[in-house]
Length: 320
Image (cartoon, rainbow, N blue to C red; front, side):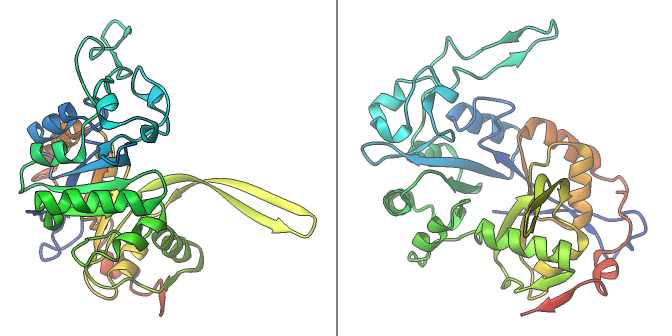
């Protein structure tokens, strides 16, 4: 069950406008703490009290949804090739912790899992390892979307896990395919989220605000390249953009309460910023570090400038 902690006294914000501390989502199970997308990482995320767990899904050659992110197996394992080129039995023989490195106090990089068995798990194995009370976000990688979506749906059916599962993808094809499953809980497409955030930032307009209860996720900050096209060429401006702002949050909530996730929140300053913005959850690489930050934030006044409603009410125009 998803719940939020509440903290009153955020700077000049009055007590009635309490700040909700965002839930902590373990990115790929917490890839900074343990080998990502493994049962070891899932166990660690649960030990560090992650509120939700984000897992990356690809499809094996024999149609088994497995936990793996990269395009090539060589990125994380001692193997090579794509996930789709191996059957599940072959994937289980690889060590998903092979390239997980830690730097000791002596400055030496070590690979603590090379002598251990850390197989690439199936989605079914992962769901069995995660209590029903902990929500799961599945980040769908690789194409085509149709066979992978169907295989995932079959696993969710068998595990009776639809109610605790959310579906995310950077490719809108997955939102389209999963929309055929009435029980599917979907993030809106990244394209829609990005376009709305950009319009708020550049045009000060709230374009096509989402319906209430939708889930949306995007980076709190991200390096972007702004390209201006001319008749005889173009100009480029690199920008370290801040996407989630009080105006953006106000836009997303203008049709009713939505569920907003800030991606890549990995410091105390970023967590406090997300809290003051009213984000519902943050995606973190280290649940161990972030839970300590969250615990240290309880009872402390946060450096919020002013209530979100006051700050944004006159700044954006809603365009439906």
